Image (tube, rainbow, N blue to C red):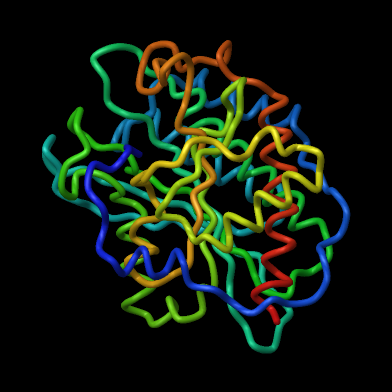
Length: 308
């Protein structure tokens, strides 16, 4: 991901400000992920080492994600494709699994994370940038799969190739996996049934405070901020406002209402982002617990909001 220097088309701004009907009552009381298991998941990914797309380590991480999903009782699907990059042609593969809903009207809420790490001239293990959100997403899937059947179904998507191959985020050298996934949804017509996309990225910072991403849907931001406050976790929301390019952009371009739950302020003056300091010592199990609680509560609220 990167902070954008120019605004996206007005389409995105209109989507971000669009309202939707209020529905029902507040979601149920707090539900939590197993933060200790999420922390072990973060450490496991770091132990694999750097995980850039197209490498054996990236495949090891993907296989681990698939095994975790099967252990939950979900059936992982690989979405393999090849794309030209500044480093030549690379084979990418997303992984996703679905939890069907019960609503006769149908529809899905997508929840995503990227699991690749950026190619760097040093050992970059991405404890926060890739591992934290991936570990949390697995635990979110575990909780939701074992809970009551949702009205709107969930698709849990683990994207490959979010990171740019070059040092700078330029043109289409980024979001390879999410662009491919959205392309497939559009081609099949399934995009019409995607009611929301919730992206997690950089959620393990010891000093977790979610950035106010100005591309994200404003109503969704209100929902997740209120969820945090209702849980006594308001200190983790209300960060600085900025436009962040990430895996939610292809969904926004396809007119899917989306939110990026990200803390784009990692370390002093964001010094740990894309650095050798992105290690477990600069992350926190407590942050994984907080974002897990906030996300579960926010998703429950979205079920009410979108199901009305």
